[in-house]
Amino acid sequence: MTKLAAATHSSPFGMLYLIAEDDLLLAAGFRSLDELQARLPMGLSQRGFHKVAKISEVSEVWRSYCDGDIKGLSRVKWEQAGGPFRQKAWKAMTKIPAGKTISYADLALKSGSPSAMRAAGTACATNLIAPFIPCHRIVRTGGALGGYGYGLPTKIALLTFEGAI
Image (cartoon, rainbow, N blue to C red):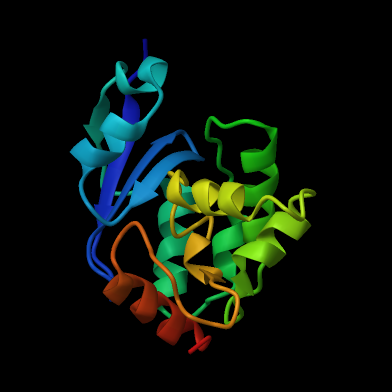
């Protein structure tokens, strides 16, 4: 059983932690490697990880993003466990242009279930690959920012950096 690669990068938004298998991103977030590993499905989390300086394609895309290429996050290949609606919602999130936001209602519609606004919110809350799957770009109807798993200050910083607010 091969260990997963884990890398840590500083950024204007705090430390970003990444877990991947080769160039396939499995988890990303702003808390800790331990927190990410705990959120992975059991079969993956049991593999453990070894720390690396970078995860080639993923780390390069992140560095470019931090340097101002705000359109590049969607280039990363990713995989995470979730049912059909969540998979559609996560894919829909990757199509939101940097600098733009959509509502939870819009996300439900783009995911094929217009009345599934709560499910759209759950897809955001269970997203294990933030900010590459940009759940920070989902806001409440009317424009209020709503929540963010890594805290409202981080959501505001990301949206400000991208020019959305």
